[in-house]
Image 1: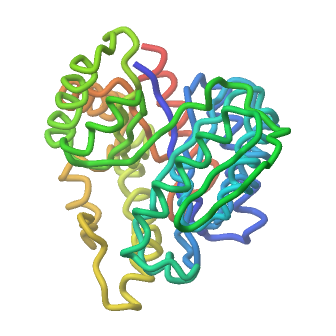
Image 2: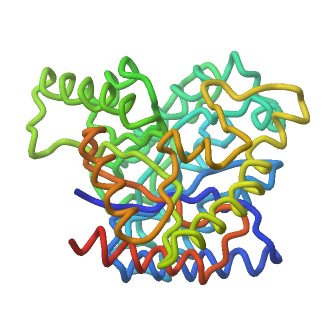
Length: 333
């Protein structure tokens, strides 16, 4: 079992400079605590994401850590100039000493895509084309690629990644049928669904992996994320979680509410108690949370548990305390 951290880098109570300093300080905590990976979302035009260019933050994070794997979850491929992203991936893998993970996707928000002139109907095709270009470019040599949206000819790939044939790939998903391509291509997955729903995903992934000749001891990571607040006093932990959930949810829904739209397949209740009752947040004293984590792992069939320690207006001290308890009661047990 491996453990990681996920972060929207959503706006907190202080300045943006303070926010970035706090998150980089947490990177040091994750690294020292023995976490496997750190995954960062990409968002635009919303306080849900103060790191719209994950590459910039991950480059800084690579210099504040030595073991922690670092990755965007996800690079929203249709929003990029693909050759530039290809070169940035090579740079990040070199700067981090081969610790880069590459999350790939279209992005969940058509509103944000519209800021870049990407029509929702065009997104899937652009995503597939840019992914093919990037994977081809990471092989090295001269890059020749002809697509419907973008083409490049005779480009020397003078940059290369440390990890071959390319850094590990990740996708976000929540449905069993979506596991076929990742399982056939050795791609790691992350999800936000309930533990019982995740069991259908992990069972199907293992089935597809085995059918494609994959060895069980080489199974890619199957991860599930949960909001996390731990304190010695249960009531204090719950008070922090309720307080922080409100701005996080507000930031998550801001663009959708402004446009009178609802995000597909995402339901965020106003009441944090309801959110936690669905098993989507683990809050309480260390023993309580450790039991919830172990029960979730058993029910869901995952081999990678990813905590969200920093969200909303949670302070560095509050998040760092949760990390310390998580290390002692979960990672080290």
